[in-house]
Image (cartoon, rainbow, N blue to C red; front, side, top):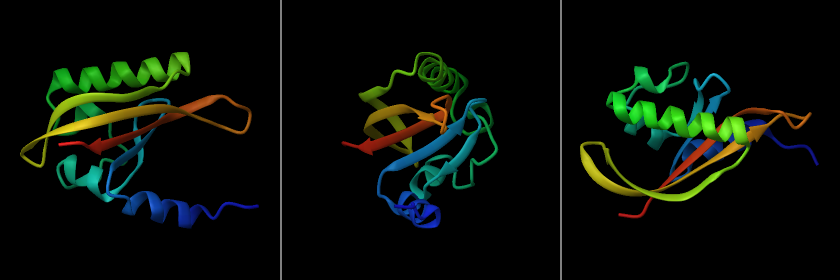
Length: 117
């Protein structure tokens, strides 16, 4: 069975959660509409956390978590955090997982935030 990449991208972009993909340099490569809104309304594609509207300490924390996922291959699952999104405090369940290529090398990070407010 062959996966239709365009269909998969449409599904990701339209899910009600906040979804992103970063490469191994921690640069955003894909996100859905909700994540783009949370990132200031503009596309974060091609940017790092330090170029987005998060404060510096949050950007550093996100990068450290992502680097941990990349270096260990271990996911972060259902971590409950408080975050300001769209000028409103939200409580989120955050999960991050490594992305692998065909040779099973880690090539990026998939992140999903679920609003549990």
